[in-house]
Length: 340
Image (cartoon, rainbow, N blue to C red; front, side, top):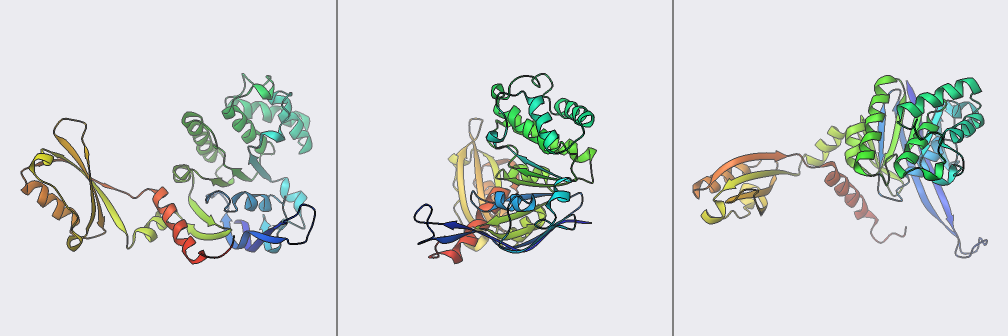
């Protein structure tokens, strides 16, 4: 079942040279002919650099912003024509601290928003108690919001987004500005929540690429308002690596005294980097090689032929971070000289 269907969606923001005047104004495209679908139960990552259009797209899906061109349907409903029934089934997790009341406790903040969402009082209190307990906020529930740490505020934002027990949850950078432990706790909670509610659909906008690898079935990479990649992480990785490089990491003993290894394009060995090992007399060699070339065999023959020994040999999968940067930089090439 298709939950989200976006077709040729475009959104532009006006940029005026003089505040309050249309004279000299131009338009900055935030989204440009964006099309994609999300199926029920999927968790999809929305990746892109700052200013790529991720938050704008989430707000369009949540019926908070109208598009200039194209159409968006969520649960089969047009987000412009039928926003009310849509909002009853959708949860938006945005960590904008200005949207909470700082003098109210966490519990009273959630009760206030539950009233806005028209959740019956008895149901709201029970659901709030469950969410606070699940997210580890029960002990702080009756403390004022201004006393909360950044991580606690992020968790309260998640609780608010789940008040209506939504069928679709839109996360806008749920671990932004958090320390590693708090970030991992929230990611673990999202994983556990997926297991409890396998039919719930999640769209997660994030700049944390390892987060997308951990949480998402599929990723959509957006840059300058346009989708530049859409698919599972493994398929995007295969597409990127098809004619690209592999990385090998070799731990040697006595190599620095015995010889050296230089790049050899004829064997597919593109680059070599050396760094001292953890133990005396050991050296790590990091090799960048053309996929399916003789580079590794050549390097090992040089190392062993010099009288050094090999203690470890690892082939490293190219990180999603490098793939992301490469895709974005590749996408920027045609745009050189074009105003943004």
